[in-house]
Amino acid sequence: MLQPIYEQAMGAAIAACNARQPDAAMAICTDLLRQRPADPAAHQLLALLHLQSEQSLQAHHHIQHSLQARPGYPPALLLAGKIARARDDLPGAAHFFGQAAALSPTSAEPAYLHGLTLLEQGHQAAAARVLQAVVQVHPQHAAAWFQLGVVRQDLAELPAAMAAFQAALQHQPGHAEAAVNLGVVLQELNQLHNAMQAYRLAYRLRPDTFGRIAQALTSSPHGALWLDLADLRRLLA
Image (cartoon, rainbow, N blue to C red; front, top):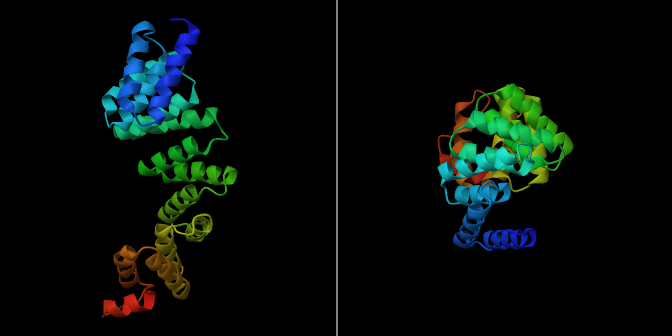
């Protein structure tokens, strides 16, 4: 296949993918692979399409072929990590995300996903280092601040957890989960008044957080006991 014809075909496949026409994109890529069996771009796009269709086995097959041709290509490594996560292969996902982050140090997504995957594996200290690095480079990354708060909370580093949840709310004021977690941390720091302010914010943002708030308030030694949950609802409203 001549290069201009190949580029036109790949452009059409990408356009079909972006237009949410996966069958058309798959057909073009499959045809390309008949003529260029090792083409990394076609394999990578097929991997993405299969991942979007929740066909993780096929996605894994194609991303492996793509990486054989381009082993150090950050977008393919990032996609490989997402496919590994979809297959519940957290060690594999962490490996690919770590590689992608090392090769593209200014990109937030691979480093954030690396930290998140480490946290999901129970590697809190390593996750904290990675997520701290993310927010240093990308200080407005609310999701990274939130996960950093979670890992600091797990490590019982409560002042650092408080600061992280506050930063998450600063950059994403509608982050109800960050508000709940901030309330929990403030309770543990024996700051019940400030904790109630955080809980009020969470409840106003998302009333379905009431169960978590009530449990936190009534189960913590730094909380308070409400015999009538309706009174608590009125206090939070």
